[in-house]
Structure formats: C-alpha cells, structure tokens
Image (cartoon, rainbow, N blue to C red; front, side, top):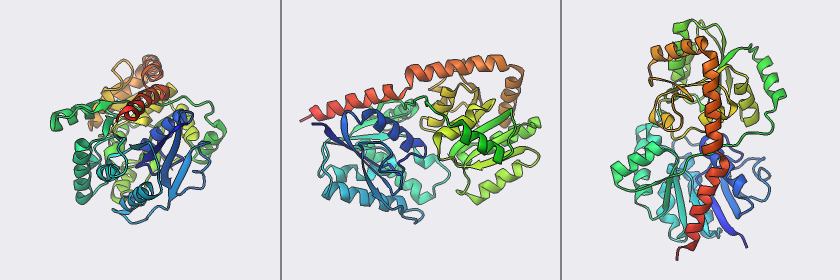
Length: 372
C-alpha cells in the first residue's frame, strides 16, 4: 500500500509559478510512488489537474495581510481533524508557524525553505517580522529541513549554526509549447520580432524591471520589449515603470497563467533579461535556460550559484549602466551568446531536472518513514 504524503503551504494548483510550480513538478513525478494530497485555493481546474492526486480546496480569503494566514489555519485544522497522512511536506517559510502545531499529531515532517520572504519589497513591517519569526521556527523545529538555494543554506549555517540540506529545484522540458496561443497573443499586442523578454509572477521593485528599462533607455533600444507578470501589486511602482517606458516599445502583456504559452513567447525572443535583486532559486531562470534563449541576469549569489559566466551573461546587480554594457555586448556577440545558452540548457538537463529533484526528495521521504 502506498504511503500517504500531504503538501501543506501551497496556494495554487494548477501552479502559478515559484513554490507552486516546483511542487506540481514534484507531485507529477511522485504520484506513482505515494498516495498524494495537496491543499490549495479553490480552483475549478484543481481536482483534475493531476490524475490520482487528492485535492483539498479552500476559498481564497481576500483580506490583505492575513488572508493567506487564515487560509493556512483552515488547512491546518483539516489536517488535524480530518487528515490521516504518513508524511507532511511543508513547502514554504510562510507556513513554518504551523510546524510545531502539526507535530501534535504528525511526527514525520519535511519542511522546505524557498527564500527569505522578508527581503521582498511587497511586505509591510509587520509581515516582515512574521516571516523572520517563521524562519526561526523553521530552523528550530524538529522537522527534516531542506532549502532550494545553496547561498541560503550557507546563511542558515552561519546565522543559526544548523545544517539545512540543499535540494535544488528541478524543471522539465515541455512536449508542447502551444505555439498557436502564443502567436495569437503576440499578434494581439502587435509584438514584432526580434524582441526582448522579461517575465515574473508579479511586477515588483525587487524584480528589477526599472533597472532593465533604465538600461534599455540608455541604449535607445527600438526593439519591442515584453514585460509579462501581474501589475497590481504597487500602483506607485507600476507608475514608475510606465514613466521609464516612455520612448521604448514596451508591451505589458500581464500574467500568462498557461505555462506552455508563456514559455513559447519567451522562446521566440532573442534575449531574456533577468534583473531580479533577490531570489531563492528561480524556476523562471531554469525554465528559460531550458529553452536555449540567451540570458542576461543580475549577479546575485542565488543566480551565480546556479550558472557560471560561460552559461549566462551577468551584470552588476542594480547597475543599469553595466546592464546596458552587457546588452550592447550581446548585440555585438550573438553567436557567442547562443553558445552560452546551449551550455546553460545542457546544465539544466544534467543537474536541475525534475527527475533529479524528485530522486532527492523520495530518498528523504524514505528516511523519514524508517524513523521510529
């Protein structure tokens, strides 16, 4: 009989990016080995998203600041009073508050940290204090701990003197990139090739879009520039983006929920710019590398720990002049940039595949199950 594995702390299923995307990748690779349950926001596509997976859904609570916490409270009580699982996998620092509470019933818990969310500009002071508290709960818990970012594992060791196992994210190449949907969208926004692309789940200051636009303005780039992502987080920042877009051919296409369509749009671009100022281990970066598209990325440790200079072109974080120089280098050295992109693609295949990630977690689950 299959052991029962439940995922706690995920909001979106089908995934929308980041944590939910890595979790969905993991579930697809584990569904034949475990009896899997996932807790998520209510979604008409959730129940049949992955055949054979049990889905427990709760309505999203639209209360800014505490809505997610209240959703997690609902998930917690269901787990405690209606759930019956052999292993709980807590998938996010946001949910670490519940680890000691889950231990009242479940003794086999694996918890994964994806980043230090208090570094994100989208959170207010109270939320940042909550995330810092959760980080301490995570580190001091009895759970088996993993982290997706090698620099973050070093941070935990230095700050808390606790070893946290580094298990990198994994992605898979798609069989179908839905080119027709992508081409329709490109036509709708009157996007012409060759174009430059950027994509994120949400458009916020720490994603560095302003740095990219400053660099492109500096070069007086006339190519179309695609910005994909939700633009409803900060009105002040979006207004800044609009001002920086004056004189450029910027096409804000919003958040593209269908992953194959989004990746096909990026796959058709001549270059992808990734100016993020803070990350865990970016799924977006891995997925773009798997497309074989040349990448210019910020030199934050979370990026340079994944790819080297022979695979990705790096610029100094937050330095738009250096980014402009690297973009100029790209246009003067396209053949070399393409060679770099092929090396990056090969690295993802060899080191950061979904199957490799699954193998690591399956081993950890087996270790937990053997514990008395």
